[in-house]
Amino acid sequence: MPGVRVPAAVLEGILAVRRCGLTNMLDRPVVADLAEKLGFPEAARWIETHTKEYAEGVFRGFVVDPEGGKS
Image (cartoon, rainbow, N blue to C red):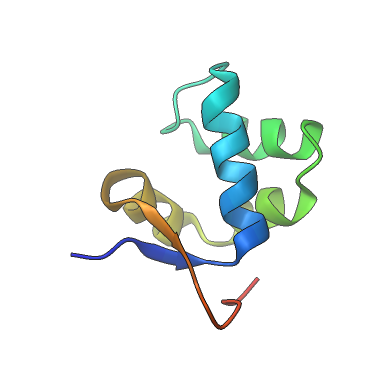
């Protein structure tokens, strides 16, 4: 099963939060807040507005949507 498709800027923000290691990636509100604080506002907005897709991506993985995805 392929990962959840996201815009490149969203994936960059999600990966930055993961690398910082300050929260469990299942804690969606904190992940969105950290993405914002780390300078990834597009990722923060996506995480806040795509809750189901975010949860799926945590378990299945995320991949860059070559068409840019919906943000």
